[in-house]
Length: 543
Image 1 (cartoon, rainbow, N blue to C red):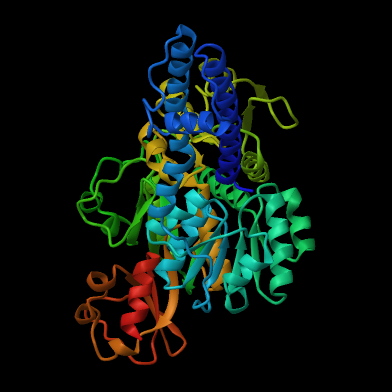
Image 2 (cartoon, rainbow, N blue to C red):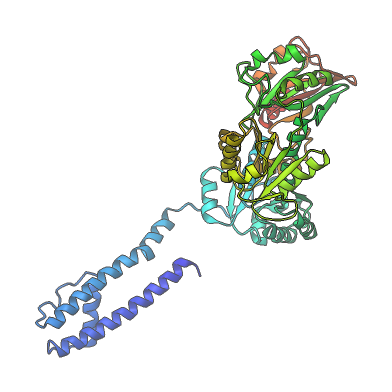
């Protein structure tokens, strides 16, 4: 029984009791104080007329004080009961009449992704799916959330994802995959239900606690993803690459030709200069494909964009060229020393960071609010005294891995105040808070929701991913028969798609010296870099 029905029964029951009580009292009062005996139904009629405001005065002219006071009390009680009926009957009825009818089935969808349920991770996944024109439906049990999603244009059905009927209504039998993303425990129930509804459907789940991976697999999940681990590895990679003279991870396109990402460190000679002023191409020979500016990838990059501390460049070139560019991006003041790293927070992300630092033989200190194995300094992670005790004034890098974005932003301000020259890397729980943490002074911020969404999309779509899931860029190898016979200038790839042609594979050889006069052939394999939307536009135009 829902709340509205339960309230209605309570109200009606109370109303009957009050009516009879007042009718008995009125009947008694008329006989005793007014010396006027009458049938009980007449007393009941007076009470009903009074409460409904339809018969005031029908028995008017009471002579006794007691009956006049009683009638006033009865009048006031009737008014109160009328107002009490508004939230019980009238308002819900109007709400139901005006409310949007939410879909409860998605029978027309095919080759779609069923997402159970909506979350910040799901939002990132949806963005990825839309960029690749893949249909989806969200199964959302909360009506208000489902209504908001429906009114914002999302494909959604309102129902319980732990119900066979709901998943069947989502046309699970025709779906490409199901994503279980509620909580570790609820996900297991969703998976078991999905296997009952459609035994062969592909299921992907996201785990908060890696220790629960086994239970997800036992329930029947095909792929269990742990985005926190990837976030930790990505943050650690930023630290190890910064203190190393080597390039770190890079994507090999051809013999001695690679694509890599390089962070412009605080104190680098490039900071404060525009891309045109930096002379990167002339000084290193490497090509800048694009850059992450406050977490957003831009390509092609305007010559007038200013390079700031924390700007991450996506570059292509030969190894010697990339190594020369790395020297330009590094901090001049910190080259002689490796420095220590301060890791704030020792959950799954923090533990992954420290494991990677230990493997790279980089000294670090761990700060956490709770005393547990692996923690060096226990205390408030945003308290200046705690960070000072951990040695932040001498540290070269601080990595915030706590799950609270508000604490991360505040801690970034504290760290920047105690050590203005320190490099600040941070994990954000939600994508919408990334810019806020950048404004607080972080050099690099990685959003867990973004990483999760990209991991899910990459797993579901099974497309080749040569740049890791913490990025917003694709580097893909594809054909371009529609551009056959055209020069790169005539095809105008950058202006039309936002992508950069990195290399061409022709007759088994990889060509990297590609100028405006380079002419496409029908059997060329084209290697392009760009955002998901840009790559999608390129493949549509070129094929």
